[in-house]
Image (cartoon, rainbow, N blue to C red; front, side, top):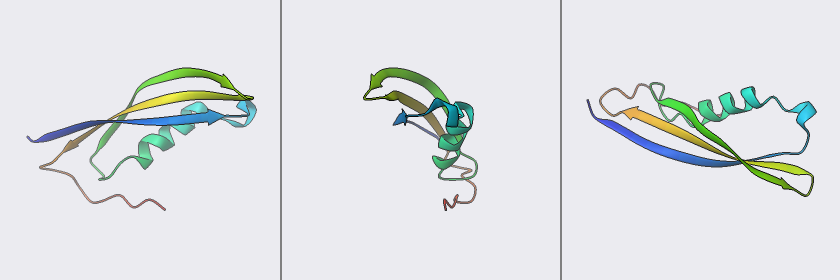
Length: 78
């Protein structure tokens, strides 16, 4: 088994919590960062950076694992 692991760092800015579903947003981030259908993308950590100019800022850290022997079909992002 040949496994490739990497981390991705994404800055998230939230200006209106009433219109933001954090769970759905994190799910979409994971799905968007899949390169192949068998990739495993997990949220490693959500770091609160703080509030700047009426926006809350977070650093999202994702762990991505790929089995290079069984990648699956490429994922198309629209």
